[in-house]
Length: 162
Image 1 (tube, helix red, strand yellow):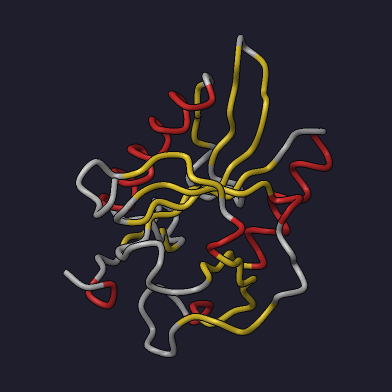
Image 2: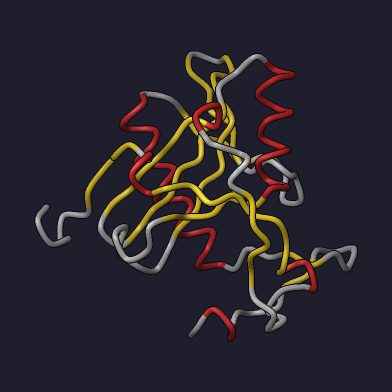
């Protein structure tokens, strides 16, 4: 199945849900890697929350996160994008809660991450697809983040050079 053939899902109230079963499974795998690397527990916020994940350690919140999975190797493109609306929500949560916000991306060759505070939010462009996959908001402002600025969390054991 390609990105353009994604299943169409809706919440009980009819609101579109953009995460497929495969997306959830991929995010769960990334969450487990984060938990092991950072000795914390990751939890999902509610299904339609603007911020997807929060981290706890010893019963206290220690961060908020956005987890993404890409279907290509990390060196295929020079940047990865973060939707401006996600950046805004993470920034608000981080500021309001006094916690760090992280953007974590799984590529086919490993997992990389960056603190939201280290993202150059001025690197904005209009991105997305004109082919309606999920909604008309598939074209929106995004922040391009250079792959070279992301720290390596884990490499895929079958990745070349790993």
